[in-house]
Length: 291
Image (cartoon, rainbow, N blue to C red; front, side, top):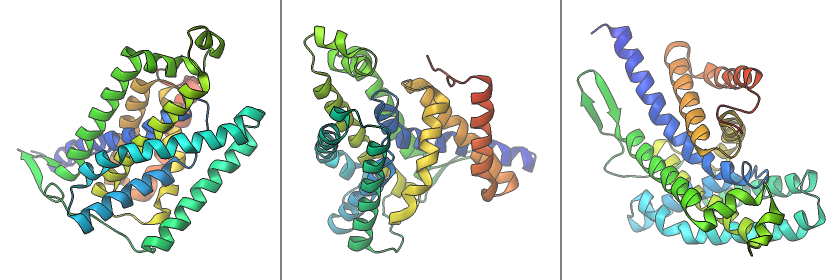
């Protein structure tokens, strides 16, 4: 097969797998920002916290990083519920969600990053697992397991959350809470409690996303800042509140970045991906599947 076609095929496949990782990183923001109207810019910092939890469990206890993330889910959920309660009492109840709330989450991001630096230092950390390194080969097609396994885990998480939100009373209440709180109260549901549960779920996804991140690449405490713009861009591009649109946007940016890195160099990838965002929003301001 022609070498350029071989390169193109593998770049597209790598982009699709990378898009699955972007979906895992963005799904928590899709819940907090897209459904609850809470601009949680600290989310990438808690993804890094998930990475270091997986790192500690892997290096100290010899545990698989994904298994460690699953075990840590309740703790991350509880942390998210506590963070939302503080945010609600300090800002949302006083109708000061804009500048005050944004400062609150920026402070959380800074505190999380500094705490990780003090505990783990600034060196890059990585994990060990049997699927990190090997690849599956189908003719000229190469599937790196360090991308394939995170992609599968991410899709399981996205599909599972979509089923939960669409088929359970609590899930439908979460989808409705940002649209009509009065109607939700008439159904004997407490909007504050529903938001607290939803925000806890968004934090719980950070544990899985963090484990996926450290499987794909080594991490250090400040690397989370690289994903702040990207995750919000994916949520806006997909359409706020739309999981399907978020996945399409994540895969689109993954493929665009992979092709750009392969043929033009990694430094061009962020510029091109955000260029795609701007063009898409100019044509369709509500995003790909926005309502």
